[in-house]
Amino acid sequence: MKSRITPDEPFPEKLERLRDEEVEVLNSKVHREIDHEYATDGQVDAETASRKDELADELDERDAGPRLSLVPAQDDGADDDASAPSSASTVASTVASTVASAGSRSDDESSSGHAGSARGRSWSDTERR
Image (cartoon, rainbow, N blue to C red; front, top):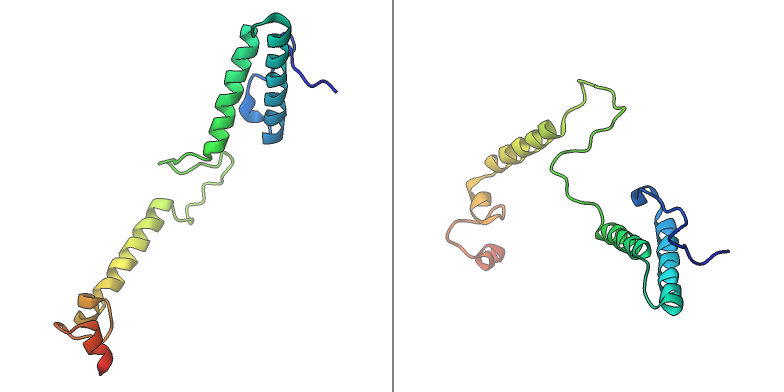
């Protein structure tokens, strides 16, 4: 097993395609190479330093987790099913039903949030009944 990756060895072009474990192993190998270069040459090769920076950026992105997207993800091979509701229509119908149910509450419910409570009375007065 080789625990270092020298500047002359091939390095993946797209780190995002690698599994987490593969990126972590590669990061370890680059750091061991940095230690070796310091010990033997007294400085770090520019290629090794660049690889370390790339790996640090990739690991930071993975640690941050998925990013908020304002546009729903599109499935590349999705069937265009006209009967399936879009996310916008689903949100609109949810909002409409919430507004409709809020409008159907009695005045007593909407004023205090509690069914059967009279206006102008405190919660404790209502509980004493």
